[in-house]
Image (tube, rainbow, N blue to C red; front, side, top):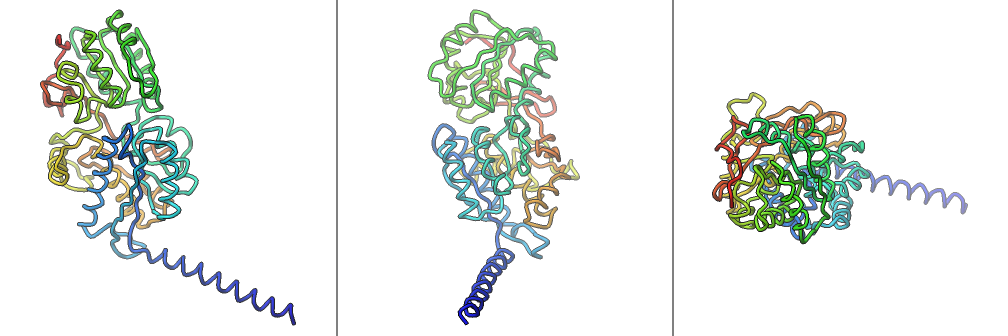
Length: 416
């Protein structure tokens, strides 16, 4: 009798467990929103750039919901986007904890990544373990893409290609640029820019006369700049983030370092560059940029246009109206990440991560951010191209490629 009772209660328990699991599964199937999570830098060393990332992502979510959501064929209806975000404090450990929280507690469907290659690598360790797709908008280090990640999707030009457009422009200049000094922050993103330059420069006919690396969070770069001044290269190409790039430009001006051409990676493409560095250090400095607010590409010129029918300049005005301030490419890339995800969901007709990932293999779209197309095997962005900008009398202007140029490059760099 006791054995029969235990069997009976065991059957009841199993039935209850099945019912609970079935209910949970049913709730998941009836989910009425698409949850997208972000661990993003609102404080710490990346606070300015991360805050702009968040504004762009929020703009995308708001725009989607104004369009009545994203149509998901398997659900037979449009679903709104719910964006959930936390401040990762520009810290790797915090990124790991928050990405885990977003997936396990908040149960987000997809992740929009953090700012910076180091933080993206930290987040990917979590998203891959949980089988969640992550849109990488601000992590361009090439070593992200050679680790076999299954669900990483790149939205920006990888770092090894950051200077490709710049070198094309340098080859057209007179007097010719022959010698180049490289100065690099010891950080994954910037190290891969350096590696790309070391491959590309000799192939393009330039001679590397100096190759210096400085630690993250460096407070003084004057010793490096003293050595650069003694060598007197035609061009200085640095791989830096905003704060250390500003330090380089400021100290270079203070010490009279005056190459013919001075580019500081993506650092001068930040809106705060002129104010932070000052006219003496900032004027004629050059940046590589993922996007600038110009009137090209135009929606009417591309049959594969996707998303809001605005030019880059139109988006910029939209951003200013919404947030009361301008943006650089950091605010655009997160909106573009949302568009890539949206296209994948619509194409797959599903929120299933594997189905969306397979759908993105066929993506080749044009938006106000430019072209987006990934390598099907790795998720590496292959379609997007960089532009070159220069600060001229307090304004950042596009100087390359010619079809997008707003001004002629000031060259050689004027005395300061």
